[in-house]
Image (tube, rainbow, N blue to C red; front, side):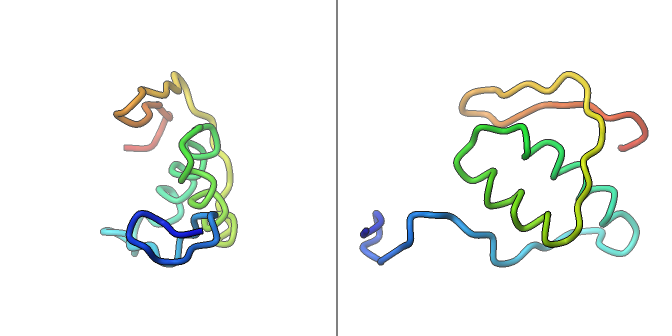
Length: 82
């Protein structure tokens, strides 16, 4: 399959790198939050993010008020994470 730039792809997105702005102090907390949000998302790239976070031992946390907003992303709340 050729993608829109004319390169050959497998048709399955893969996350190759992740960069965290505050990796030293909050990596695990934010990794788990991102995982918990993306696992509920229907966006085509969400599964690639979930797969990569699983490799980094991400764990699901409880979210409240998850909402997918078409064309704008998702929204959710979690107690204790800012």
